[in-house]
Image (cartoon, rainbow, N blue to C red; front, side):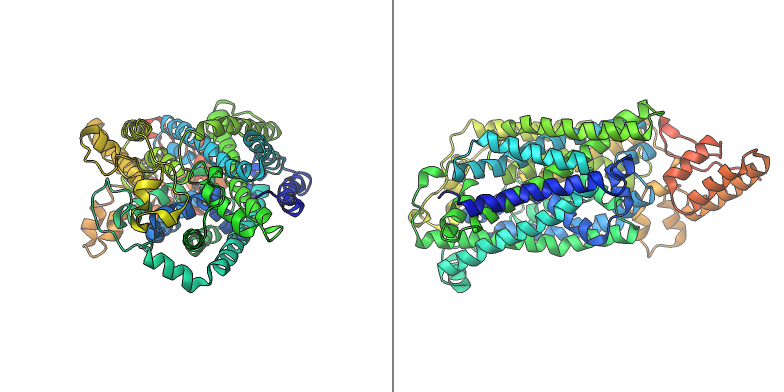
Length: 632
């Protein structure tokens, strides 16, 4: 069950290669001397590396360990999450990505200031930092636990090694190093999973035997149409709740948006989002197939060392070592696969956290900060977040199986963040007071359910994971008796707050984002909605006129809530700037502002226009710039 020299060499090569990429980009090109290069790769990344980096960022060891373990215990029902990928990636590609890219942002939360106010931006940034710091701990702890279990290495020694390597190449090489190491690590992840599936299927007797065993033991799940939101998995929680989860990940999360913004063109950014869809389906399919192969194998073979499996998530690596022990190098490849997933996610978190901290919390207070100084501080931030991640790994050891822990974190914190962006995009009459109140209400509701569920689960004794499934009373009931994800009291009737706390974790994101939207709308209407003419049309997506396209133009115009058309705003500003130019001692500045706005670079143009008093107002104390009626 222990690693051979070949396995250690393969594993070491991954760490060395990742560090070498960081050193290469630290010493070549622009040598990471500007914040644009360090944080956004000079906005010069191609379609393919961005796609693979998007895929790798939130797959990680959570999916590699968690999905097969979930399938092994509960059957293939989790596969229906793939249904949510369609809208979960189509909506970001059509709505969020174009708006963010055209605004030329660096931090996603700059949008909240453009649309609402600086206070809303800071609230969003702090919420994101909290979310990612906790998530980093889960992602770092998962593969370290598995690796220490099969090699005998110290758990915290493994955590320290992986955290330091990741911090090294992220701090030195910036986003460009992160993206290219993601590409390498994605290929390693695919190779490791395919090796396990091929060898495991061969040992079972072929894919036909794997399928037959799964069918005979009721592991191939049908569609569960139960609408009860307290049922852990159903077509509704996976298909609809999953859409909100995917939107929070691929639509508004800084780690992903930063990759879109690093693309050379808007077209390539949108294409990379579309291309993630088949890749996500492939990754989900490989995880489900690994779980079925693992189940079939242990229907035919006894587990030899059950004492090695202390939590369900270690089952996957135990299986890998069991079937690959006669193939030197393949166990090392799979562990490298696990670490690749973890490194890609953690490095993305470091870089995105450094970005939002610099852009949202430091630069606004130090506007005269030099470029070289800002870049140095950004690198220091990446280093400090790397060290903080090591401490968070200990907390994650108390959170139970990694798949639910990770998805719960994004549902609890990512849901409210998704809600506040939806307020800005789709409801132009909402104001900053409504946005902040809605975010706070969503976070309170989220932590009430999340912490209540965690405490309630910890107060009930749970069964150990199944170690020999041949003795199980039936494959269809594995979930009830095997895992920390469900309690021994799951079959009992519960009511009151306990019922409330048993809300399916797949609904967290939908429930919490909806809370933000509803509260935000109500408070905005009570405190005085934002006038449509005070809203920059570049910052909203007016969905109602598009959905109700068959209505007469008069009614569709009313559904704009008074928001001016982009073409109309551009024409008015061009006229105003031409007027100002005739009286300006520095006409070149005016030309820059006019050209920037008309080319769609709203952010830069707005700054120039503000400096030159070109007719924008800032409602609610923010940067929601808008044309003023002016007679020429």
